[in-house]
Amino acid sequence: MPQTFYITTPIYYVNDRPHIGHVYTTTIADVIARYHRLRGDDVFFLTGVDEHAAKVVDAAAQRGLTPQQWADQNAKVFEDTFNKLGITHNDFVRTSQDRHKIKVREYLAALLKSGDVYQGEYEGWYDAGQEEYVTDSKAEEYGFKSPINGKPLVRKREKNYFFKLSAYRQPLQQFFEENKTFVQPDARRNEILNRIAEAVDVPISRTGAGGWGIPFPGDAEQTVYVWIDALFNYLTFVDTPDRRHYWQSGATHLIAKDILWFHAAIWPALLMAMRKCDGYDWVVPPRQIYAHSFWISEGQKMSKSLGNFIDLEKIDQYVATFSLDALRYFLATNGPMGTTDSDFAEAKFIEVYNTDLANTLGNCFSRVCNMTGRYFGGNIPVKGPGASREIGEAFVAVENRTDSLPTQAFVEHRVADWRGSLDGLNISFGCENVRKLVSAVDTYIEQTAPFKLAKDPAKLPEVGTILYNCAEALRIASVLLWPVIPAKCEEIWRRIGCSHYAEALANKGRGDLAEWVKWGQLKPGTPLLTGDALFPRWQPPK
Image 1 (tube, rainbow, N blue to C red):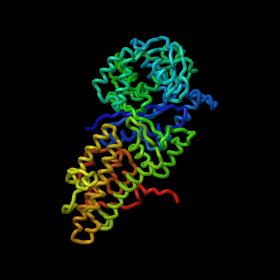
Image 2: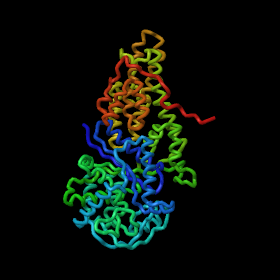
Image 3: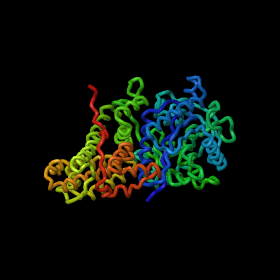
Image 4: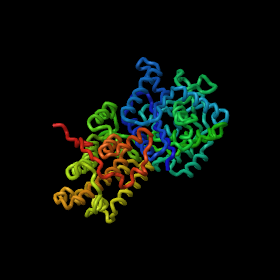
């Protein structure tokens, strides 16, 4: 049944241009958003940039620009990059916009009135790399250096406004107990729970920002601490009459592991505090925080000095050489969605491209199209008498399993496993299910040998059954892969007479997954068009 679904990425600092980390998180969020649109859900997908950081002021000063000029320049690069990469976000955050700043001041004024925000004095360690205050114990654990950039932590003492995080230890613990999948993966959940038990009140304003930032309500000398300002973006950009229902359905926040504390502890506590304020009883905690790991490159931590940094230029090279869909597929299937970092290595990229996309999906589709053209004039054949084997039997051979299913039941099982994977944000496992389906089709062709049967005119009806089964299984596989490789799947749809899928997604903004994955949708007699290889096999230049 269609649902309302709201997904966000973190908002990215504009002190520099986008790199593979930004592209990865945003691409994964796009895959998830597309999946829910394919299901027919009402989806809102939010991404954007965080502009009020101190490092933005520093980077601007180094270039002789104002913070706003530098933010404008880099915000455009982020937005242009996401558009070029086919990201389907519904809105783009800029925290310097009035629609954000006005709401943030309203929220904090309400929290001041309720008493959950108060004025006090802070003395402790400050991590300029992360723009985060850390406790004495954490500073000692870090060796009094930033875990982000290795620079020394700074001892600070200043008057600030504080949020009463300590008052929400027990409510947070209870919320975690009642919502076991709130933080994923599970290992991250345990990490946060241990820290919540020792949570203290946190400063949410700062002095000395030079006017760059959101003025704290009622105190012109203070600006809102950049992390609090940033967290509120998830709410400010849907706090309108026509969008508020997205928030109330429960947000899914996709983030990297280094910012989990803010999202999984401070953010839900702030929202709990807001619910007690007049007029904010509609505010609920997010549905889920998913914290992925990092990319390394060629087996090492990314570094510009090592020459292994995956920047925009290198991303453009991969897209130009292999296609945007190939990049999306690699990120989705080999990225760091779990608790360990992933290696972006060129040899691995080429291996995945050739094995999964060129040899498996692309080659299998070409074989079916070419045989249909050769034996049935390029039209999808009638499904006639049964073939000697089922695709499900081929799957047994591929997987070395002992069970077997009729073709239709086998495909339905693959669809169900894929849906379960995508619902749990396990995109890699979902793609593996589809790859196994396509591999089973390939093995089915080898086992039934339609290219041999076609030599006997009496066997052509059986050949028709085999090729119909292959084309129908590939049609369903293309529906399942659309969130990950949309352009190539829409090309498949064009060639098999299913362009109405792409039209529905483009015009209505949503698909009909339940209907589109039903077996038997292809109509005999429909032209099955040949064309260029979907993914030409890559060979190193001579």
